[in-house]
Length: 197
Image (tube, rainbow, N blue to C red):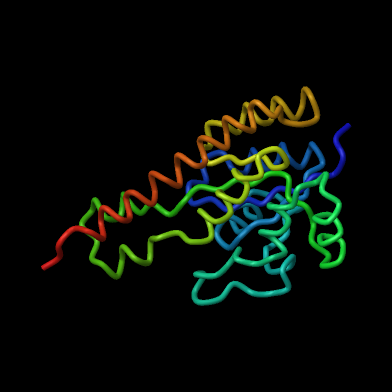
């Protein structure tokens, strides 16, 4: 039986997310989620989900521009579990370790390919998502990161079979995550460097 684990879920592409969260619940996961994802999970009947503001003690601000940029979330992702000083900090500041980060990003390329103006394009640059993804990918030995819904089944199978996800799979997922944030940033700079009338 798995010990209680915590997942942070914040997705633009909500494909399969309700059924994935439901299966995580069966495995004993607590789930933390942001605005639109939180609403989708609640509407899908997921009752064991906490809104990020319940965890951080701070509301989403600036019309959703600031949601997950908080030590209680990023600290929970970046903490190295077998490093005593890290675990002391988590205890001191009442930060819960986060074991799984599920995140995909605002569709910047889709919006700009449709001819978005500068203001619209800038509003579709995801800030919190890449931060969470990179933090989880950096700490892959302690945290599982998923950026593609196609990975939900594989990750669930490993949790069900072994009670955890192998380091080998975690590394593969970490590479995928860094590839995704690199691709995303490349799309942004390519858009911004183009001459505008």
